Length: 151
Image (cartoon, rainbow, N blue to C red; front, side, top):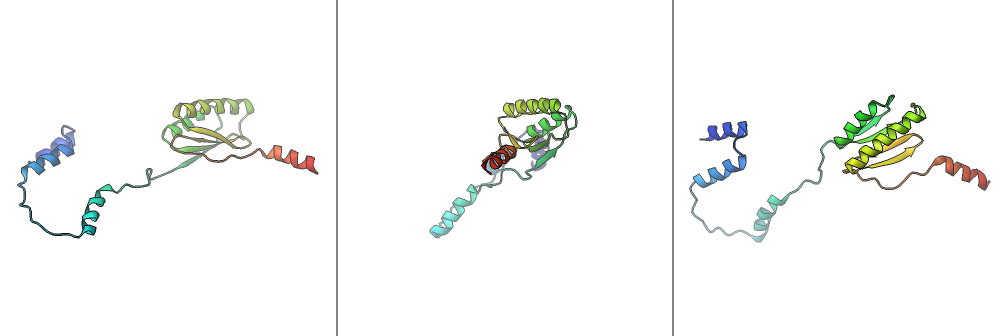
């Protein structure tokens, strides 16, 4: 009977939970023996089933991308759909093309419920909804102008 259950499970015709329930119902019940256990061991046995892993993702990746054409924006969007954060460097692309790429990625990030942040001149961080961004980076050029005015 075990081979048949495994075969049906392999084909997807039967779930493993059903197999376990059927096997439990087939096995005869053992007579209850009153064994005294300490409260610590009783608590230990009940808590063993409630262990939850803190790490929800095993491999967290940040993708670095330096697109040379508009066609590569779709590859960046595919990484975002796969729940990977992407740092996009647009310093080697013409200004009009960089604007188009940022517009496309902004729409993608919005559709996925993520965020886009400017890290520096023509460098952006695009994140899916599973990544939270805290803080901000101020423009260095604005700070340099204010610093020179103070002198």
